[in-house]
Length: 274
Image (cartoon, rainbow, N blue to C red):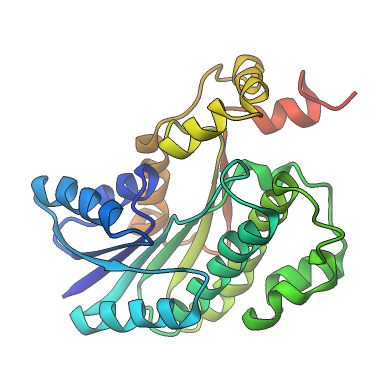
């Protein structure tokens, strides 16, 4: 049986799973059982074969247990990593632990078992594009530092990462760099892995942000962007299906920015820093 593992039971992960999970065993893992159960019911009612699991992506033991659960069901041919916390939800320390370290951990553990011809997608964020250029040494540190040493690299010292917004930007830039490096290792198994960097996609997490202290800024972003609106999970699902399917067979180690033009406006338009 071919197995697709979805980590993070939110709207974006589900949208991708619906595009790539037909005829395969979907393992739906989340930190909270109630979230996994609700998403599993939605997918099961739509005809998908789903089992659930609990996972804490910031724990190696927990992620490894998920790998064992998945491989016991069959050959892992797909991994969708959509778990994370946003700046309005967590401290800088927690964001680095979940969004940066957790992603590196998932990539390493599932990269050890991904099947030939398999593929993975990591959900990053347009926030990674807000960060100014890093040095070659900093890029290499985020991309290649052994996972269990990742949070100890100098650029992540608490005195340098003081707020949640910056921690989030560094984490998401780190995700795309880590995927580029992991694509080399996954390639040796005949598998591919890419990132998608969405902008404001209308999900419960985005609603938390829109209702939070940065809400006015986010609404302004949408108003001046080329698209003039936020995105939908299904639009991200379309790119996820491309990257994980046969039409994306020549794409690996890449990041796909899909933000309706917000980043373009930030660097060269109305959102550009004065």
